[in-house]
Each structure stands twice: as C-alpha cells, then as structure tokens.
Image (cartoon, rainbow over all chains, first blue to last red):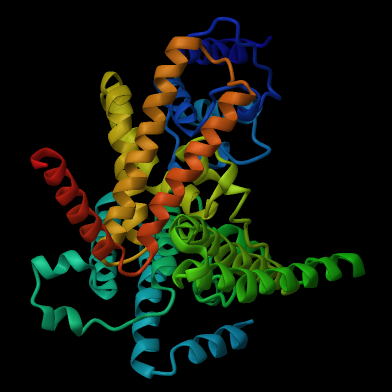
Length: 85
Length: 369
C-alpha cells in the first residue's frame, strides 16, 4: 500500500471509528456502509487539515460524482500538495 | 438552438416587459461571472448573491414580505417564468466561475443554458459545464434507430404519466367520491403524492428524452423515491438535481465553514445544517405559507433521520438493517413524505387550521366531558 493511501486509510478509519475498514484506490463511497455526503465532507475536512490544502465546492462535488473513488481523492491531494509546495 | 430558445421564451411570456426583466436577471449572472473570472473576490460574490437573492424573493412575492413591505409594492412584482430554476442555475454559475471550476463560457451558450426550453419551466437543474460541452457539438444523442425509438417511447410514456395518470390521481384526490364514503379521505392522502410524482417524473421523462434528440444530456431527476428508507435518502431519490444543488451550494459551504473553524462543534451543529438546508429547499418551492410548513416538515424529517442514524450507529455499529427493518423504514418514510406533500395542496394551511381547531375542541371535550 503506498504511503498516501495508508495515511488516507488511517483518516477514514478514524472518522468511521472502525479499524477494520480497508480501502483501495478503486474503493468508491457506496462500497463503504455509512459513507454518505456528510462523511464525504468530514473526510475532506480531515484531509485538508492533515495536508494543509483546501478544496473548492466544485472540487468537493466532483469527488462525490459517480465513477469517482479513493484514487480520485489521492490524485487531488497529490495535485494540491504539488501546487502548494 | 438559439432561435428555438428565443421562440420558446417568447411563447411563454408574450410580453416585452417580462422578457426584458428575465433577460436582465439572467444577463446579470453572465456579467457577474465575467467580472469574477477576472477578479475572483469573495466580497464581490457575496454582494452579487445578496442582491440576486433579494431580487428573487421580491419577484416571487414571498408571503413573509407582507410583514415588512407594503402590499402595493409587492403587487408590482412581475411574474417571470422559470425564475426559481434560473435563480439556482445562476448561483451555480457565478460560484463555480469564482472558484475557477468554470473557465469556458460564451454569452450565447449561457443564455441558452439558462433559457433552455427543456429545463426552463421545471428543471432538472443542469450544471453549466455539461451544457456547454454539449453546446459545442449538438448532435442527437441516440446513436441508432433503437436509441431513437427508446427516446420517443420515453416521451410517450412521460406524456401518458402527465396527461392521464397524474390527472386521474389529482381528480380522485380532489373530488370526494360518495361511493367510497369515509375511505375517500385516506385514499386522497396517498393519491395526491401519486399525482405529484407522476406529474413531475413524467415531465422529466419528456424533457430528458426530448433534450437528447437535440444533443443535450439533461440529468435524471428521480430514482424510485418512494422506496427511500429515510428522509435523507428520499432527497437523493426525489428531484435529485435540486438535492445535489442544495447539498453543494447550501449545506456544504455552511458545514465546511463550521467544520474547518470549529471541528468539535460540527457534530452537534450538523442537525441544524440539515434543518436549514431542507427548510430553504422547501420554501423555494413556493411563496405562500403552506410551503413554509412544507419546508419545516422536511427540515425536521431530515434532521430527525440523521439523529436516528447516529443513534443506531452508536448502538449497533455500521451493520446494515435486515429486511424487516428496511421495510419498516420504507413504510414510515413513505407515510411521512405523503404527510409533507399534503402541504403542496392549495388550501392546506386552511385545512391545518381547521384540523387544529377540531383537535382543540375534541381535547377540551375529553377533559370537560
């Protein structure tokens, strides 16, 4: 598991309060019980705080669209951390 | 497409003043977008949205305005067709331009996006980037004869739903049938929501299939809404483009503002966010007091659903419900939805006052004997 995926998995486990959750880059929100719009925002907030980045409303909405997955979130994080560094 | 759009608007509002007012309302959004693209200022965006919302509230003649404005002023507001949907599309456009999510625009595509004959009257609320992408080519979406026949079939089925099924449900819900006796009223309780669904979903079938013939992808708006297990799920299945809009432009900004600054408070205030968001969605539907009740009920329903879900999760973890639990949840949600929809009926506030009076009288009689 790459380090970014491991870190984001840790964030997700903390928010769900469940260490048994396993995600891969192809995991989508409907694959995880309880990953609704509110949890999506909580994940975004946690990721923003962890990596000192900021997502716009449009970017957050795009990450929730059908077809988007954890890999899309990781790509967005990589893009924003590259831009800000 | 431009000529078709212009002709459609002219037919809906054969009045130069109304057309000019609608164009001014719409073009203000394009102008604001051009300014925000060059200078993405939060202050400018806030000022524009405040003015736009004030204009919308006055043009829609919301009942609460009677508390603060003379009725002669309110009466001067002119009716503009499709204003509610233009308003939401406008907010989406200027916010996304300011955030850099919309970079390619043209005045022709923006006007046709806002005044699109297929979405002007009652949505679905399409997002500008998808419209603009289709605008570049505008070739019919059905790729072959089968696709074309399916589009025409969908238009036919939508027409049947709107013209026959919905109208039959409305007539049965509104016309007491002596032969049914006391059964008519409970039947009416279910028939009115059936009318609302067939009327709106049928309209969406017509416009989505019709738009595809012109090369436009209009998003789906319904996904078996009466199977929802709670009010939050209901609003992801009913008028979905509205739900996603209020999620992205009302709920998300408010919740992020709280979550980013005071993460510890977000968990408690989320219920207020849910209530406020659905309350605003409710009163957006109409200007009279019955829509305020509709909004309050939906706000309460959604925030109660979140409370219940939070409590259940703490008690049993993330285990999904079994079949009996799911069925019970669907039945309860369906009945609550039917209750909220009674307030979409004209005269529903008068009925509520009358029922409240009868309940008060019955209670007094029970106590005093």
